Length: 69
Image (cartoon, rainbow, N blue to C red; front, side, top):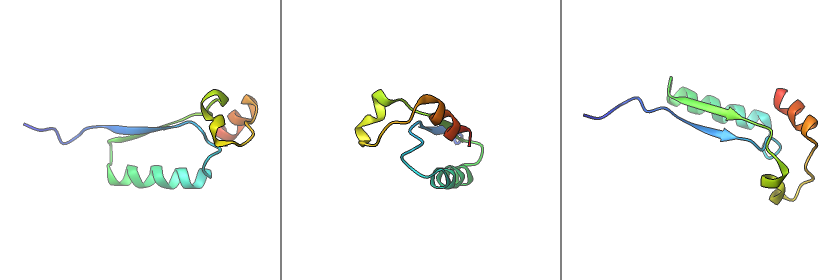
């Protein structure tokens, strides 16, 4: 017997890497393709993991404001 309802999702912490509309579109597409199965976790990231992008890393309060937006 095989299952036909395996939940899956993604974690997207570095919100500054992609425009929020791009992230929302991707999440919406996956949710439509896999109704009731897809989940997404969003976060503000941290410099120790994301500084490799080379961009200046915003303060935590600024990252949190962007996440709320």
